[in-house]
Amino acid sequence: MLENYFSVLIFILIGVAMGVAPLVLGRLVAPHRPDKEKNSPYECGFDAFEDARLPFDVRFYLVALLFIIFDLETAFFFPWAVVLDKIGWFGFGAMMIFLGLLVIGFIYEWKKGALEWE
Amino acid sequence: MLDAIVALIIILIKIIVIVVPLLGAVAYLTLAERKVIGFMQGRIGPNRVNILGLRGMGQPIADGLKLVFKEIIVPSEANSYLFIIAPIVTIAPALAAWAVIPFNHGWVLANVNAGVLFVFALSSLGVYGILIAGWASNSKYAFFGALRSAAQVVSYEIAMGFALVVVLIAARSSNLQDIILAQQGGLWHWYWLPLLPMFVVFWIAGVAETNRLPFDMAEGEAEIVAGFHVEYSGISFAIFFLAEYANMILIAALTSIFFFGGWLSPFEGIPVLGTLFGWVPGIIWFLAKTAFFSVLFIWLRATFPRYRYDQIMRLGWKVLIPVTIVWIVVTSLAVELHVGPWFS
Image 1 (cartoon, rainbow over the protein chains, first blue to last red):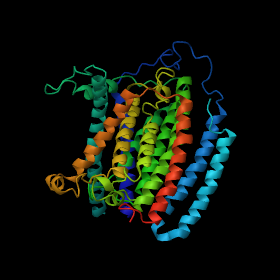
Image 2 (tube, chains in turn green, orange):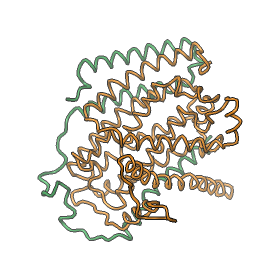
Image 3 (spheres, chains in turn red, purple):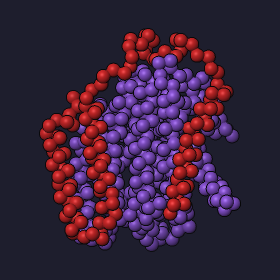
Image 4 (tube, each protein chain N blue to C red):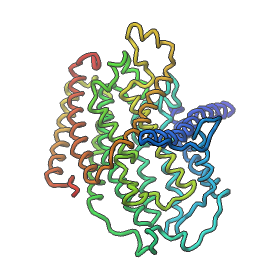
């Protein structure tokens, strides 16, 4: 089993190499003549007015937070799903209570308007 | 020591056997996209770079060569370290996810029991590349593209995760080979039929995850020019492009594994057709299904107008997630009650 994960690790390293190699090649064979205008951030031909790291809408944070909660729920579901036929009605009932709590939270979010984008 | 080296070399050869055809498929998917959309719009598509008289067949090679010889521009305002890292972070998971994809019975590099989790984890890692690229560029368009894309990808990640949970409930395993073997018995035993809503959810979420039209708010060339990779040039842009297409093929392969029986023949168990097509190797079926779903991506792009951002978020949160939650209950009930030919 561990051997299998070793080949996964090798594959990830190969994936990284597939990203690094073209960049190195490009740096070697492509011209490299930077100048001030070329290296300025793109803003439709204007000089950039200000730094691009502006404050942004708090809803992006909200989505990220909701994502963490729901993704954690998904992580709880994975092991349960695999053994469902072995744990029978007790396991089913326990997870349905959990899912019920999740749905109550989801309805609360929805009513509070956390999912609105207008 | 010698054994270890031999084992390592065998693993490397296997990886090359997967990666090289994959990169070829990626290159020619870009050509296929231009050709198919061209034909759908009554044009010919690329037809100048010929190989053996086949018009346009050399186009991906010509594109690749052109991009290698273009200057890699690192903007002066950018965080140059993160700026260089971003394309690597994008392509590595897009390729590495193929480690657990079974191409035929037993033809898999890493036959791991947590295969679904591994694929799910790596497909989530892709969003880091987009975020890092958008942040490091220090350009407003790139920043907006990255923000939108991150929010969109994480929203659809949830629907996709729940859809996968339903597949696991049905297959009772998270090993990709076991999931395919659980679907044995011909066309009507594949999970697209009992899990039809989940197939639709998975597919829509897959299109949104790869930032493809009609959900390509991350790029949206009409409003934020190219989104997160607006500052990238030459080969560093090409790496993002390759990663996007590798992810498309990955989603197509996963759809055929989870819902369309992977390498299984569609004619299994049908009297005459079953024997007639019995000789076809499994990998042909797998590749045919994957190719079909890859073309479906292109077809969607040529057919649908782009969604508005609030519509995308509403579809993800208010339609797909409730549907998946309902179907988790339905499927787990069906498994507990041993319903029909699928869950007995």
